[in-house]
Image 1 (cartoon, rainbow, N blue to C red):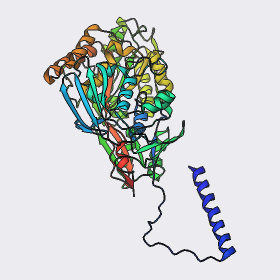
Image 2: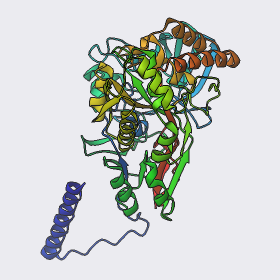
Image 3: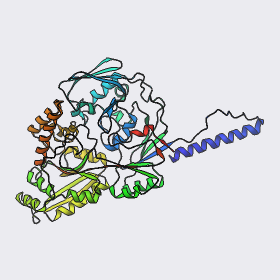
Length: 526
């Protein structure tokens, strides 16, 4: 940004000198000012403070919050849902269902990608064909592939109409179609991996500059179908330290931050120049055990560590009680949440008994590592667990990694325990299939990093996704929740509230827990 302003200053200076020389040379009379001409203004730039650096900005691989913060502004979907989980049309103008195995989308005409090429049904087909292709991304495939397995084929019936033909009814699919559309002509020319670093979409903003570990800037798109945004540029500055991000917001260095550590909230609430938003969580924080490695293949060890974890204390100390209790893989605000599950309230004696039965005591301790992505919150969780578990005969070391490295390490299974978080849970399937279906353990199919495999659970998941009967789905999801909690597959900690804050100068903006900073497209800076 400094280089840009310096260049602009130099250009203005040179123009002024040239103008003065011309005036001195011929004494020309200046042209009269046009009173109807618009008054020039400084470019409107909004700065967002982020904690981690994205590893990708494509629909296919940009699945985490750091990526979604940006991709939702540079590649819009056919449809999306609001905070009440009700659908609204975006790039599609209509959606209908001829039968249980067919979804038809009709597109708006004249939608232009950032490069001026019109978006058509072929681009929709290309986007989701690529997402579900196991040979895509140099043979590695994409992490969301399991979401699209029910799609038998995608058929372009005319330039602006596309049909998704399914091999089985699949209730959650609509939620997974809310992904940004990628351009077929770019993917075919450069390869789909090119779009990971050079995203192009139909959206209000387009990528300008990406300096890894520093910032990503996006600029207003002149050909956006709803009109050019009022904001000219949005800069996502990487500010790893949360305390520094808060100071930057308070002093005007940034205009918005999210994922706020709860100890900073009260100071921001007391600041009359800042708006703080707190909403029910769309996900949860949890701990995974690597069941491919002993002793975590022993359910007694997993259950013991669950009992040894004081989730109430963690919620109080780290989240300042701004979080909901979490006992299952479906968030408490979901219609599918089942309260009749095994709950591991803090019980040190029970934990000690189970550990001793598994062969671990303070004299013969369990030695393990706990790993997580760079985060002040997760670092604090790790330190508390390390202290709380020590006198039970569990000695852990904590290791934190940059986001991309941590994600690769998680997928590779090179760990003992992981701290993880899931967000954006819409249909209850979002907290179930990728985490617990056997296929989710494959690199291309999900985040079953712990290696859980249970044919009974696989069958229940598949049945819950095939039926559109809400009562039946609820009963199936309840059985799934009870089984995975009884076996202590995860150590659920809490469902944190969504916390974000922005300067009061930022108008017509509200942070959403599902589509993150998407509302910035229609906001402005006062």
